[in-house]
Image 1 (tube, helix red, strand yellow):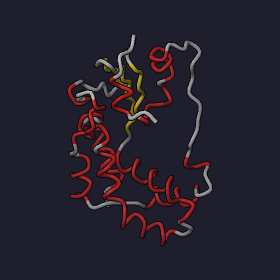
Image 2 (cartoon, helix red, strand yellow):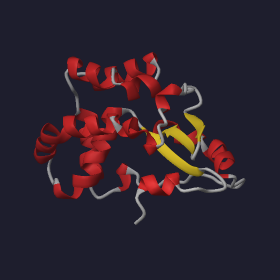
Image 3 (cartoon, helix red, strand yellow):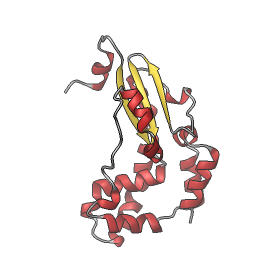
Image 4 (cartoon, helix red, strand yellow):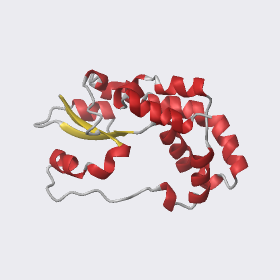
Length: 179
């Protein structure tokens, strides 16, 4: 129950290790909404209502994830992100921060093993949308969901998306969701 700020700023012998992820914003928003409301949304019609009501607010919150600067003045955007690697490590007392893109998790076990100093570390699969009770609905939403180009452009021009995703990656995502 110690506040985050106190936990991080307490004197210690070594930095606090923090692992934090990011994800392409439309995919993240759809997954987040279904994660929290999937069991309460039994039909595609109700899912459409949920998306219409909560998509923009939820995506905006997701885009602001790194704005809090971890209460230590750490601006993650000041450190270049290696798009081809899919993860970056930032040392900033009192933090040792590992930021990864969820899309790149399948090949990040070696980098995480090194960061965590656990040689035999490997990632498994957990919290997979396709394995949940609402998997059919989630799949249908992901297949059908589209946004107008002007709204997508605003999402993909946000600092988080511009930092963690290359121009080409953002264009591919834009084309995926534009309708």
